[in-house]
Length: 179
Figure 1 (cartoon, helix red, strand yellow):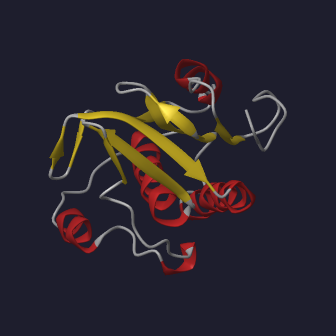
Figure 2 (tube, rainbow, N blue to C red; figure 1 turned 180 degrees about the vertical axis):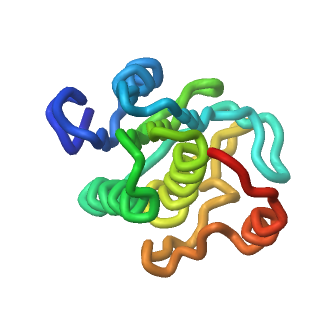
């Protein structure tokens, strides 16, 4: 790992990092489990063979502004803990460099006592990572390449609107119940 909030995911509650190596998806899932957490949510963002308006993508490469990316990953984890104080462990690890189609490019894992908090915090984490952390994707296809069509202007975490307006209206109509 290029950078992590702990030397090994053993005695801390947050595992952050950038790596040029294959992501340790299964290890992250095992590590995030805790005896007091009945919910464990994993999101693995895998490289796919197409993007909006483009088929035949043959490869991806990610670049990060590491001096800013790792502190912003930490800020996302801290904000998730502020919004969902009951969550247990949080994993936010992203690839840099070439990523083959089908391989994991980002992994987010959140544990919590109940599924509602785990799902919500996990969704917040991946949305916030994509919107606020300076990591860019280069797509290659048919002998050409271009920075990903979903590249966006980064926002400060304080300016992130979450949940997105369309999801907030959907959630308002949901029936409550035991989590």
